[in-house]
Length: 198
Image (tube, rainbow, N blue to C red):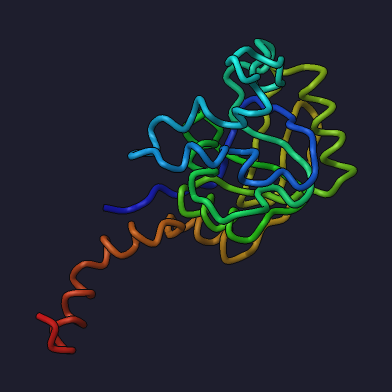
């Protein structure tokens, strides 16, 4: 068993505005009791998308214009707050494949990485331009090129940054430590035997 190398991620984008969007806003705490992660997709940003009666508040994620969007664009310090792995699980199960922001909370970033969700950093000026592009024309595809550290949208190219160790992990398909462990079963057993555990 091994991961799949991720060099590029593409899809339509959706801009969810706001600095300091924390994990409780991404997935409310009451959903942490779920037995599996399968039901988390529809609960993404639930309390800002729906009122107490379950009626839509008209959030951008529910706009027909952005239906099927695969890349989430947001602002600074995205994923801050408690270190719940349910937040990136909800993002993934909603159908989003990557997140672009000005900065990320460290634990959220790590939890996304192990799921194969690239979190790329883009400065405020370029991110504003990108979010404007996809807001005006939601049909535009965004291409996140991890190898070249750039984003292509329409006829524009924007620079991005990413931790080099994370970038290498995506390109080498070593971003999931469980996959790496399972793929190294023979080595694990050999060391365990040498240590007298087998």
